Image (cartoon, rainbow, N blue to C red):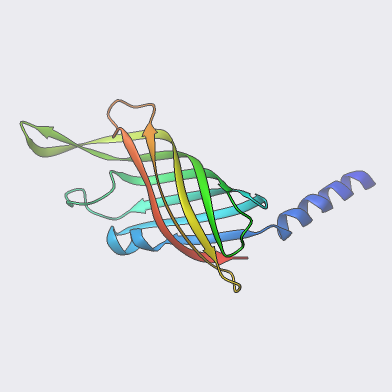
Length: 166
């Protein structure tokens, strides 16, 4: 029983002492009427796991928008340096998305088809962390949908996040 309590205490302590971040994608909010919120948890000095959720409020008839209306993206990041201020990272992700794909008939677009799919992809970016815990990260990448024939072929992974490390 003592060993069990010791293991539970160590696990809780390691979880609460680890660095965590919560961020919002400011570029999506300002340009695309889209909200993307991310949570990132550091599992080591140079590795983290995270989860992003995206909700698009842009109308389907808009000229410039994501095809995805809802997307959940778990990701893994590896940081290439141990610099606490500026750091470069590579990311692998799996995006689960749903939305509407525009279908063109005779060169005009007049109908939309609903889709749900999962994509696997990679991204790269850079992150700045201030002494006060303010986080800015910029990243870009691309994924490929895997399961549905009626979904878009590619899924973008772009962002300019601003958040807080605690």
